[in-house]
Length: 286
Ligand code: UDP
Ligand code: GAL
Ligand code: MN
Image (cartoon, rainbow, N blue to C red):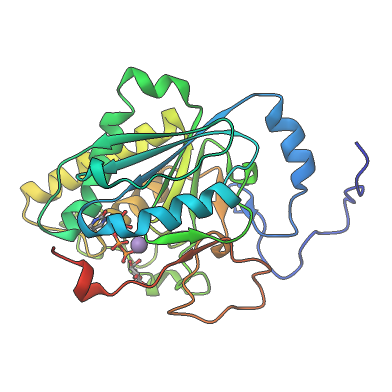
């Protein structure tokens, strides 16, 4: 393979942090050569799972999510979509490329949207305890109210990754919306924390995602028994988990942006996975 030589004294990007203090790469456009990565990952013949929940009215987001994933998510790899839903009959028919499959996993719904969101941790962890998960090397867990609009490939694969929240990647840790009440299992004091990760895009190896989702589910069960609910639900618990068990890669906000809330900053060369407009009154608690 012929490609530009990496030079020890020439950083790929000078304008962003590309390595955490625990030596995990932070993934920005311009820091990786996808051809080299593809060469390495293709040799392993991996299968990547993409789990997504479409419960109650959120089913309306699923078609665009899947169609856009066909265009941009792990193109050229074996991919299995795991659609968790209370409405299996409403899963749209989407044409899938070679090597790509879709599995529907029936789940119950909860009246409160917060519970639907939080229970994802339980449902994913229990799913990963079933034998069918053996066919998968990595699992990526995503919100459904999203679309892919640029490349998301093997550069994200690693034992454990989280994604920087677009609202907080320039913020001081004391401004992060971590859970601040010591009574919650998600508690993080103001002088601690690395990044504010979002709940809508995380993943890694099956073993690590199982460990993460199980730990978050158990922490939320303790909170429930203590009559406390973390401020940002599963996202608060994810942040606590990733503070204690550091991710091995961190995705830049290229991997989750919301143009309805924020303009496109020049530090992001690509917006790969973006929020779809959602009318909260319309969609919640139905
Ligand atoms: N979700 C769902 N049905 C609901 C509420 C939530 O399927 O009634 C799932 C869906 O995958 C959604 C995710 O939970 O993307 C997180 O909820 P939401 O996207 O509303 O949270 P936000 O991104 O606004 O924090
Ligand atoms: C909002 C987002 C929420 C939550 C919150 C954290 O922008 O819509 O889902 O992530 O930030 O402060
Ligand atoms: Mn969302």
